[in-house]
Image (cartoon, rainbow, N blue to C red; front, side):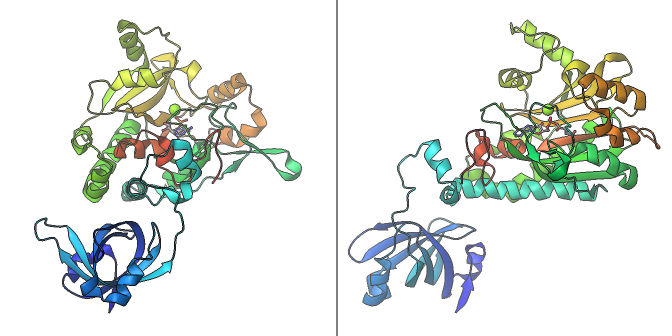
Length: 432
Ligand code: 4AD
Ligand code: MG
């Protein structure tokens, strides 16, 4: 008898097969009839246990099952007589592999804290399973796009001697006789070395920020894809980001329709976002916000409410570009038309999902960069290697970093970032 999975169920209609998985749920209908919701990695199926069909002995085994017991089921898959594409399983026999006693997650509503404390089990729920499948697709879609467009994967180190995104969110770790090391906030600075050899590069891995903020969009450990390209300037940098994000949207719609349905994601909204993105300068945004009565200044950054106002009424993401140099990182290139501004752009997702990408053209002039590093109060010797890149064949170049979890949140419509990563790390939680 063939061992199959629910992925291939429709190829085995009417045939006796075996499946392995878990009991999501079960229900007693009468003394002779029970229904089991069986699940494997791919899907759920209702298995019908009918005593006259199974025989006394096999039916007794069905009576032993509990929520989340692991089982092997033997029987015949059938298509539902009235609902096309819905399958049922006529059970002939069932073997318990591992019994589950008093599974803590039940039908009643659990609070977020309870679920997070049981994250190792919560992962099995239908919505969490769907979210993680979408994560998988997005991860590979990003890599596919970059690989097709001649970006080489170039892995940046996690243990670093210096900061790329300011010193306030650094995690410090003791490092032998050399003092302290810091967990990377972004691999960008290293990618800038990589492009001088490989032209276009990207990294994709965990980054760390000691974020003091407890919001639904912040983790202390999250995944970032940083991309960097030689000879690419500000406008082209935004074009690449737009093309990449639109590729991800189309891929998700194509490969994850079932998961989007489980998550009740409005797919029409995603389809509408696959159109030319909008652009506003930071100054235009401030003017717009002021007109709407927001108390804000020309040197202010945006919080969640402002981000929502930026994309209000827009189906597509909005690039906010040309920021005051005071509120952006030291490595961003000055705008030659206005030296008070830098050629950075943040991409703000619609529907209140906020900033998903931070990017910029990089300062390629040695002396300007040196003065920016000094102004930040950084130790120049830590950045000597980074300055070297401006001494030996410097080129105009740009790059950007996508927050993977933020992008998953938007694609899947999940409001809380803690649900789109297997084991979230937050200011008040490191377990499990
Ligand atoms: O805007 P950020 O700070 O940009 C950089 O780190 C650049 N060095 C990237 C580059 O140019 N290569 O971070 C990039 C993105 C943000 O737009 C956001 O989506 C995400 O990373 N992000 C976070 N996601 C979850 N939790 C946090 N605490 C995050 N901080 C930033
Ligand atoms: Mg940013």
